[in-house]
Length: 517
Image: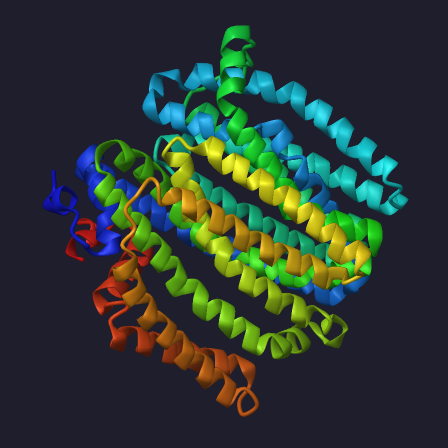
């Protein structure tokens, strides 16, 4: 076993991640993980850039009312996504990674569960939209988004098999292709009409292409059959295993979208339009912890069984690494929020400014919840994580009702509820995580002092230049000042930056650059 793992030294974060991969999977496995992670991160970056740019163009052209309807229709259908998957994707990836020979049977059992659920959920979505008294246009939009949601549900299962085999390249390509189709098709439709229900056709077409692409990969590359097999004993076993993940998924979906539903019922589409723009900005940035956790989750799981000392080090470094990214993003966005909103989207979205500032504070805790929640799941405490998410979901529902309905804080109430809930979820889960690992608070605090100093220097720079230069140049100057501060204080070494760039840009790197950290 490598010395760094044996004695638990505080080694470089990026290298530490891949040491257990090399130990358990060999040199080739290490290189594959590096390449896959680089592909996946790159795909997510491209996807988020296209997605956010596309949504911004729609918002500027459709106005607050129509973009509110568009966002509501997608949010409404998204809530029901988990009722088809039930967290089965987690079981699929975990079990195929452990026993590759079970791939066909497991895939067939899961198809047997998902197919009837898809029909039931589709009917349920459209029935509920009728009962809630939405307009005929909105009902049509929800029907379209429910079809898109059903298609996407099967797509994640197809890609899940490849993920279990440590192959993220096909999923990365599919993600990029999907977004390019949405972007180009949506802009073409936007030249013809500004009806949000017509614009949803771009999403539907892209999902169909992605479905065909991923299904062909499963059939041709993996040689798997799409014939569902209903085995009562196996299905019962799967449903029992996935129950904690299912509840966690349900709680998370309700927690994520209940604010939009409340706004639609108590306020209206225009309020959703004001809220959807900052929400989309914040959501777009979540690819960063998502990509990191795609690599860290299996490593958390392995080290929990073999080396808890190294697990503690990786966990601590993951939290710090995410704070290194999110603190300047959050505080920088808070400072330039007014210029960003009014310049890019126009004065019609001016009410969104304060909402963006509130949500950016919450994004700090959203980032931190990724490693904390994944640690609990990886260490077989998914029931604890599920219980905590359920409690926060109930709190979030009550808080949204109070702030939106009773105090009439409108979409600002939804922003406050989201931020407070994210903070509480992190506090509760982090407390549980301390029972699993030995967190070096003294060392972490020393690093945080340097990080907060660097963030403060950047904030002061942004404030001084805010009314002196165009906000885009102010952002670039702020980023430069922050990067220099980070390097000078030793928060991040130049070698770390070179390693990251090589792993992203230089695919096929013969010798894993992470070994030189």
